[in-house]
Length: 245
Image (cartoon, rainbow, N blue to C red; front, top):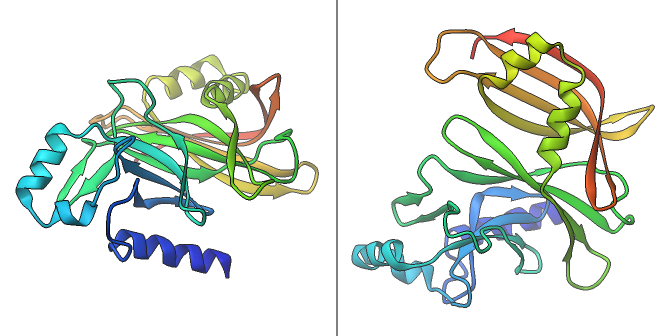
């Protein structure tokens, strides 16, 4: 029932049912388990629907506004984390009127399992940045739902590096070379193994853009944990094969 209610909230936000000035607008295609990627102007409330009614206002906004992407709690209608931060070169992902800003770029969320989060009231969400040919798991965010308001208890920007290192140890030199020479896309699912409990299924698809050469697909069961504020990754099993995308 809660998932159904949250899905309806996302739909209503996306069609402007809650019109008026507000801090952010949700990216409808970037929603996961009650959280979403959103966008807005830091320190400024925006009437997104009013801007969309006038093409000149849309153009002016796109050309002048300093937009940031956020991780938000849908149910609490709160910004949890500024995903753009202070980097002026960061790409942003948002849609206004008929325009999608973020040339071949978008941000997605994915559930991810990680041990030692700090308690049963902690949740983990993966932030994935997608580009034209490849993507990247930019960070894992640990969320604390213990109190009335969800808070961020930790950020783990080293997750993809640790996962890739663990996978590399299971591959031959030739397999790793073939995997790493292409543009890599990572995708995540969760699964339950009787021996280990909930783990992650990490899939890596690698291909050289605009090439007829076969690519590579790697599928691995990966156990993640936190130690001293950093990510640790252990590959439980792995499959490697050449594929044509």
